[in-house]
Length: 112
Image (cartoon, rainbow, N blue to C red):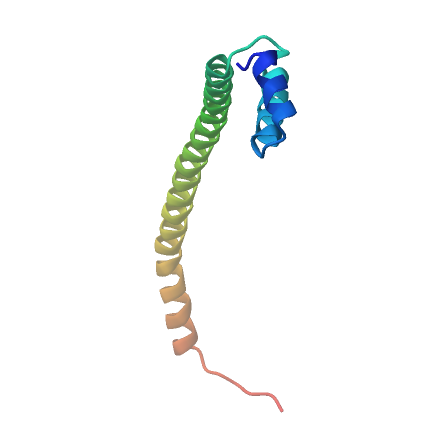
């Protein structure tokens, strides 16, 4: 990025740019140590983010499928339970009426 001669010249001049150039050279050295350009790093980061998002999407899709299955199963069970209760109520209704009529016809005696 910067030649060592340019950095050495700036360091010897003693200006405020000395610190800036020193930092730039230090950062350039840090970046160049692994041999990857900043663009390549960004591309790698984007690919990593893409794979993480795909994994997260798969997990959420799986969770959605489980919830849909649970909702459908639960709805069927509840609908069946309601239908069974209504059938039981309808079958008990005539017996209840006859029991109420029988009680109405029988004399009630109270014991003290």
